[in-house]
Image 1 (cartoon, rainbow, N blue to C red):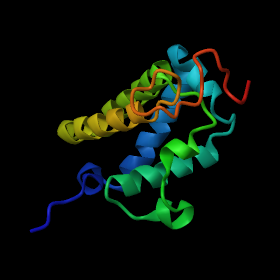
Image 2: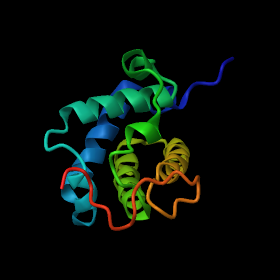
Image 3: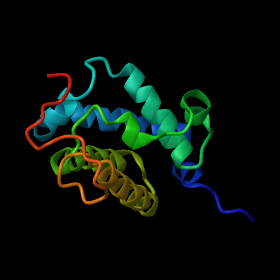
Length: 146
């Protein structure tokens, strides 16, 4: 018998939708992530849809993201945004709270968080990023939307 994907374990698209809605609600409501929120468009409709598709596919659900966008190339797609430890931690705070709120399977929620924490760390592109020497932003750079 095949092992079910984490997507199936957490309840599929309904849970992914709730997760993303909770994630962005946290981003809107938590004062400690104001700078992260400012990196995003005022209208989050398209951003939410993209994250829902990406997370669903990443968790083993339907391949809607790659069918529309191709390979994720996450670092490349985020090069326009200075991402350091503070931005990583703010993003993870919003996601941790969203997972706690929406994913009832605590083991699955922890597995998702652990994997996303590695991914979020890898996304850093400010000087001092230990992952590679191709850093884009100094610690004094402003985001493109400022």
